[in-house]
Image (cartoon, rainbow, N blue to C red):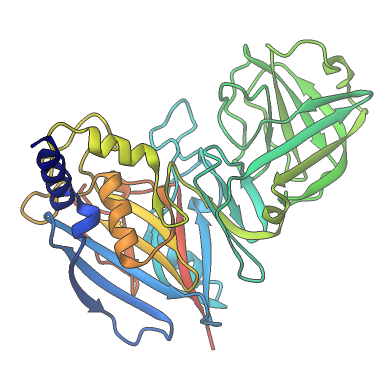
Length: 399
């Protein structure tokens, strides 16, 4: 009898597990938009959820992966459609598909509204460093896809001393005792005078790149906070908690060396990269934490929202790929009669069903936006297109 019960429990688990039943109806959108690109609406038939999916062939020579920064600087927000329109104005490529990107500060947060808290590399320029080192995706100039864990290793040398550089263009975060602000942040640092010293440095060739070493000169020292960022250099913010280590060496006229690299070394070749929050798939398997949380639920209620965001049914945006295809996915949510959204486990399960082997979770909720053919084609949960921090594009060469 115990053996019978065990078999019955396994059977019931199989029957109620979305990963074993994933399926739905696909409706092609904008057929013939570009060779190597397939867009469709996916009505998931396990629960009430509508997704919009773009599949880009990795072998299509005229299609490309790109990222975009809102308002071309870190401090500021912009709609996905506006970012796509601005990219189109360059004339060399046209944006075919665009979705919202990574995580950061959407509210004002003492002047830091719009600041990213995830990796962003655009046209070979390192704008912000990785935070969730597991949930990053990058593409090299040769078209190689990277999603291995990545870290920034950076330092500032002055005199005989070397200081670790923890952050680039971010608000003061725990653990970042030295932060570099470049003109990509905005006009000024928005820092608090009581929490750090700011060193104005010049002689730095810009833009900053993922593999960077160059000398600099000290052009000034300030303890007033909120320093203006020079157009031909940057500001080094040093926390008051950092004692000694050559801080007294930063005097006007002194010189030193700034060194920055990404590890592993193949990440130094990325042209476009974006960071999310949480790795969904690795080598074709769902993140173990998501699997454990899913199976630990005492009762699964379709469409239920909860304070545990991984388990809550929410609008979602994700990026995935396999050996042949790049996937961009937006799931609508918070609209019971139309689409309730997905848990992260369900999102990962659908990605596997569609063929992805690697995937990361991007920002969701009201930010989830899918733009195609110059229009928003999904139904954002806020009933309008929200201004976000950055975006992901599929672009095509203009003949």
